[in-house]
Each structure stands twice: as C-alpha cells, then as structure tokens.
Amino acid sequence: MYNTKIKILNASVRLFNENGIDSVRLQQIADESEMSVGNLAYHYKSKDVLIEAVYERVFDEFNEIFRHYLKRPDLADFDIQISIYYTFFSRNRFYLSEFFKANNSTAPHYLQWQDCTAKMLLQLRSRLQFMVRKNELLPEKEPGQYELLAEQIWMSLVFFIPKSNMIGQHYDEISYKKNIWNLLRPYFGPDGLEEFRALIVPVLF
Amino acid sequence: MYNTKIKILNASVRLFNENGIDSVRLQQIADESEMSVGNLAYHYKSKDVLIEAVYERVFDEFNEIFRHYLKRPDLADFDIQISIYYTFFSRNRFYLSEFFKANNSTAPHYLQWQDCTAKMLLQLRSRLQFMVRKNELLPEKEPGQYELLAEQIWMSLVFFIPKSNMIGQHYDEISYKKNIWNLLRPYFGPDGLEEFRALIVPVLF
Image 1: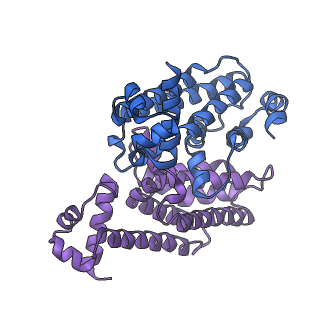
Image 2: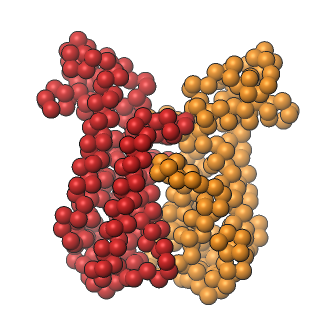
Image 3: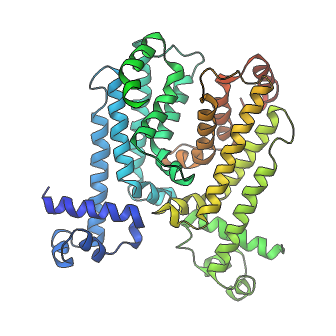
C-alpha cells in the first residue's frame, strides 16, 4: 500500500477512536493527514470508501494475529500474542464502539467480526489444551474448567480497555498483560509455575 | 410516576435498545406508546427532555440494585442480586452502547455511570470478604486473589450480554447466572459447597 494511503488510514482511525465514525468529516481527516480534501479524495473517493478501507485493514490486522498462534511452544509465545491483542484493541477502539451501537447485527461487518471472535476463542481453547499436554497447566479438576477459563481470557482481551475507561482506571500494555496472566496463574502446575517465574514474572511483575 | 409516563419511558427504552438513541424519532416513540406526538409532547417537551428522563430512570434502577445488597446472609441473596443485574443490563442495553460510542468521557452521565460501576465493584469485593468470613469461600491462597475474582465477576455482569451478541451465542437469565456461579465455584470451601449444592444447583444447574 502507498505511504499516503497508510497515512490517511492512520489519521482516520485516530479520529474515529476519538470522536466516533459518524461525527468525523472528510475535512478533519484531510487536516489530520496534512493534505487537501482534493488530494484525499484522489485516494479515497468518499467517506464510505475510506471507511471500508479502514475496516478492511482492521480485519487484516485481526487475521494477522491468528497467524502468530503457537510459533514457539513456550509461555513467552502467548505473551507475544497478548501484546499483539493489546496493540490491536487499543489501536482500533472505534470498532468495538461501532459494534455496541444499537442492534449488534446491523454493525458493519458483523459476520466477519463474529468469525474473528469465534477464532479467538478457538485458539485460546486449543492453547490451554496444549499447555495441559505440556504439563504447564494442571489437568481439569472439573469438566469445562478450561472452557470457562478460555472465555474469561477472551473477555479480558476484548473488554479490558473499555472496562478501564468505564471505571476511570489507567491502563497500559503491562496492566493488560498482567490481568491475563493472573487469570492463568492459579492453574499452573509445578512445571508451568517454574516457566512462568523464569520467562514472564521478570518482565511483567 | 403517571402510568402514561412509564409507558412512554418503556417504549423509548425498547426503541433505543433496538436502534440506538440517535436514530429514534419522536414519531416512532409516539407510535410505540400508542399515542399522538402531541400527546407525547405534553408529557415530554422534546426528545432531549425524554432522553434525560430515561437516564434518570436508568440510574434509579442502578441504585435500587445497590439497596438489595446482603439483605439475607446466604448465597441465595447473591443469586437474587445477579438476577436483578440481569434484568437491568438486558433491559438497558442501549446505555452500554452509548457508553462505547467514541470517547467514553463524553458519554452522557459519564460520572454517574463511573460512580455506579465503582459501587458495583465495592459491593462485590465486600461480599467476597463476607463469604470468606462465613467460611463459604476458602481463605486467599495468594494476596489479591479475591480482588481479581471481584473484577472478573464485574466484567461478566456487565459484558456477558454484549459478549453473547458478539459471538452469536444465545443468552438468557439462566446462562447469565450460571456463568457468575461458575466463576465462584472453584473457591468454595466445604461449607460453601454444601450451601451451593443445596440452594443454587437445584435451581440453576
């Protein structure tokens, strides 16, 4: 993609995050991109075309996250994936907002989003099972325990930033990641705990 | 409050939930309330006045929940409070949507909402401490464990319904309540487990 297009998309996302898609005008995006509206329109004919391009990039980024699944077998691999989720959800706050607008099923790209969130859950579940097989996590004490844990981790990945905003709590990448590791912590076996203390604690805690 | 006013407020909330506050017109609210716009305007001069009345009732309901805190010392008391939360969050879905719009701090009644969510967390924390003192919950294995659990319960109370919508999962009061009890379950001591099996399991599981 041309640099100019990337510049315009970045400026749009910044403004969408701050003000909501609806209230941002092309003139503002042009100003934020440091170009004339004419020049902007040369790259993106209308606001609708621009919005579509923004969404396309959101889902490219989302799918990029999935490709980072289990590149290495250790806990640090999950830590990297959490970082990528943090970057994604803090950079694209506007999308979650659009999603919460009124009837969910009318949100733009509802099905794509639903598909992505289902994939997130699937990867989380598989990763937990993988950690159990590697003896990092204890075997399930009751059936469905790790299913529930996967859902809790999913909720924290998606809602930690809006939650912090709602209760007026400061957040950053460290607090985001700590929150996820704290959810996993009670389930570590001796091996997992040792690895956690060696790889994750020194960096985060 | 007059019956007519209640009827109008209920109709407004139903429409706000379905379509978002911005896109609902007074005419639609009048139709949904089965009255003329003139009659509607007699009770609420403008859409802004009506919106304010809707918010006022939202916060009345929210504060009503807090008054239901620990009316009885047993686990069924918490079950009742979870039910009330379910009713509140399923009935007022539009508010969470408004909150997610763009910049949180510009959401209507931002400070009131922040105040309510802080109170929710406070009550959850105290309730967990109360359950520990009553030997229903095991003592903390590591410091901060119940602080984290309170936050997880808070997230589920607030985001369970949007989460279900996002992943295209059916939800109802039973699944909402089960989810919360499943979070608590691993922390029950023998007394708590016995009470849980006697009071909660027969109704929910």
